[in-house]
Image 1 (tube, rainbow, N blue to C red):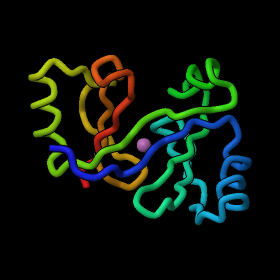
Image 2 (cartoon, rainbow, N blue to C red):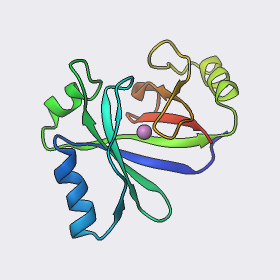
Image 3 (cartoon, rainbow, N blue to C red):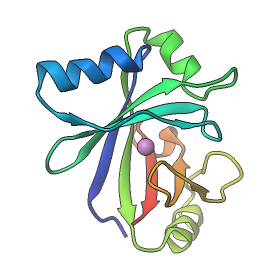
Image 4 (cartoon, rainbow, N blue to C red):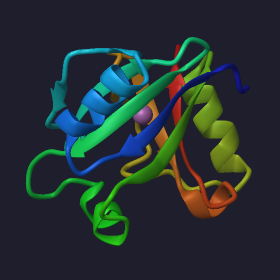
Length: 134
Ligand code: CO
């Protein structure tokens, strides 16, 4: 089911500052900010060679990363995103095995214009897992 690691996401309180850190201190290539109101975040992607780093900043009142940043005000690792071939088949098989999905369990369109789903961290060794149909 699992294919490559698509990205590692880091929640940050200040996207501009975090993007500058990766671009200026590490010399990485960083994408332009992309607002995703449906997901309550603004994102940039850092090209890390074999994978990407997704920097997430809260967007709007009910951002799903607001509580995370309350607990970790300077930011921190938020989720891992793995690619799958067939997101509905992956969801059904994970659900059958007892995994819980966030939201209504239906894929939504993510930052890459592809369907994504999130799995409850309590079912995955304390890590929030995003699946993306690649
Ligand atoms: Co992500």
